[in-house]
Amino acid sequence: MASTGTLRAFYQGSDGKWTPRGHAIDVRVGSAGLGWGRGVFDGEHLPGPRKVEGDKKAPAGIFKLLSCFGYQQIAPDTRLRYRAVDAATVTVDDPHSRFYNQMLESTSVRHPDWKSAEKMRLADDRYKWGIVVGHNVPAVPGAGSCILMHVWKNSATATVGCTAMPERALLELLRWLDPAKHPLLVQMPEAVYRKLEKSADLPVLLN
Image 1 (cartoon, helix red, strand yellow):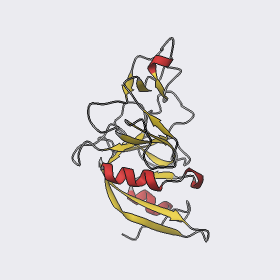
Image 2 (tube, helix red, strand yellow):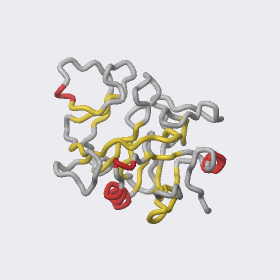
Image 3 (tube, rainbow, N blue to C red):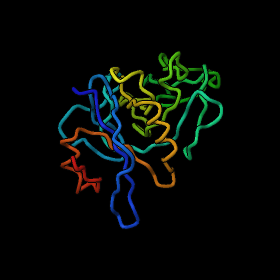
Image 4 (cartoon, rainbow, N blue to C red):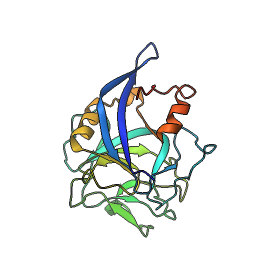
């Protein structure tokens, strides 16, 4: 399964037409490719694997972009709601936890019930900036958790389920995204996308 992709940004005018913005961005996704996830688009009727916890697949589908986060206390230039992460910030990936698929401060939970959680303050820059993807919300245990758009480690390294890109490209997205416009991440194999362009009112890809 391919772990590489191309991210393109579009905005929809008052006339309903889609207009491209900026340049195409190289991204890395899950090392095991894609699996249909839980978002605003139901891909259950389409062929291909389904996203499950720990499968190293990035979710395919259409998902809301909910908020952003980063290592700095001061928010970057963005209109998205921002959360500064520190050594206590984790995302819970234990399907048996009542906090499954949530980002929280571990010190704020009196009786943690999870056996595994990912630390959000890393030794490298992968989570220096990031966007929370609305996958599996509300959470179904085992359907996948903690899906993010974040800075890539490098152009050769896939993720375990997120969508990663160069820091400069991610910061540009943060500046541009407007929660009042209800931004979405559309992520799926190109062949499937082209079949859905008209029926799902998606931007038409020219190449």
